[in-house]
Image: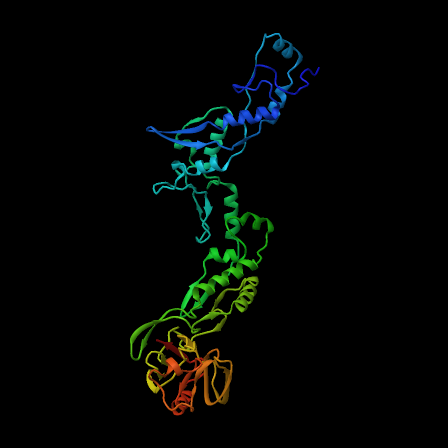
Length: 445
């Protein structure tokens, strides 16, 4: 029998101690939640220390409970109408969603701060680099499981309790995987029976042996994927892992443009960065070659595929090079440590924005009797015939400049080149005859 057609709570209806008489379900919910969220949750940490968690804007899953109360049964209704009964109800304030205020308060608790003396909980795992894939025992730490703490706090709030007497031992994080796990032992046996290749790269005069863990990763095997790979029961190359590995290899071992110490002719030992001199791994070729070798499970003991290597295999400039001193406007050519050419030069025009870039470069090639063309700052073009052309940085190179009567000094500051190294013809000739493609060109201030 439906008696409460207005769908409001009867007079003297109290829910969780809050008077809801005459209110609709939605009005009662709003009132109850408002009262509930004015509470402040207190954590007693001992020694008189307390911390607070703000409940503002927390939402609760209480609609169904409130709806059940709004229409009491017939006898409850009669008793209530004859003043023989008060309607007092207790509902569970199950938290539906915590608020930003709540989450920030929880996150900022001092008991959740990273402390130096805390031992981190660790799951048992297989050491993928050990000889027999040893199982490393789990660690029971003293770090706090924030999820477990939050769960207990929400349970207390739902029951109308707003204080927690905190004992850190109740909330230590526990390992989920133990060394006694049967699956770990199965994974260990699976790894022991794999036929993996050995990979050693000859990098810049030293051997770099790739770890077993990294080789496993090239086949898509990590501690997280061993179980899946066991079920697949086949060893296949992970293309994305190979690409990532080669990219990392290039990042670590490419030396092009890195800082190098250089003993200059006039200024002593200096540091130079920039240019393109050094080792550069050809990533596309190396990915293709390594993938093929991994598919064949072939041992690898070789150099990577390079797109360029330094003139001197030590990866230093060595004792055969061209030195261009931009400050002193001088050029020297050294061959096997012996000075072959000394020349005054004119470099890029500073005032016109054509300064010659410093760095260590390769001689890209050399060419006789050609014409250099380009644009001047005013938009006009130039065509300059030269007898000896030796480019090392894009359109920048060394060449004879028969149109100049003087070299050296401060000419380059206001009447320099478009970036090239202008030389007297006889010095250009001697330089041309001494150097060869890939010869190091050192440009510095």
